[in-house]
Length: 284
Image (cartoon, rainbow, N blue to C red):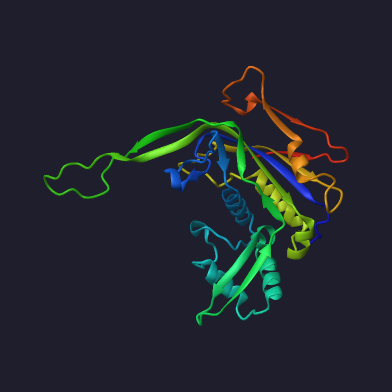
């Protein structure tokens, strides 16, 4: 494994077409938006998808979804206890966790679990990979549809009236182009053992972010990574600030377009940064 020696910044452009990109449970599961109508996808949601892709690629993951559990453990406590049994030293605990699980050495993790005697060891790991919440480049329109059922879920007694067909409501974004930004810090990578090979795995996970992610809220093809800009600096600290690097990817509506309905309604350009040229990857 090669130690990560260069800071990395990245920008991914994601299109959402008639899909619920990230439902808000406090708002009837409507797609998340800010007060100005711009669509949002939380950083937690993005990291969940990256973890799922890591798992698809065969890497061990600590924070697993219940429906994707592949090691038989029903909770984070059980998973941590099985691997860390008897480990009391905080530094040893953190190092072993980073060696075992890719998402821990990438994103970090707080381990604060008690044993059967009520005693515990609190260990915090800071990960080198940071991901911003994604925001759409233009305000998004949200549509809602009522869903009905065609069969009864319960047996009806004789003479009992037929139950209502209405089940609920589905919400989706008509169209939105979202921007995901993030960085990989070399100093933190040195502490967790995050390697150059791990960075390449994260790059592939971002490029294929929505593979195996289809659902009724996100049908196959409704969410797509259009382009991934991968900036590899020539030093640990970075030649430019992450903010400036992220701003160098410029996206604007084409002349004459007021309401974007497809990715082609946007013009994507790169502001040149001397000595820093990104690798530009097409998404899958």
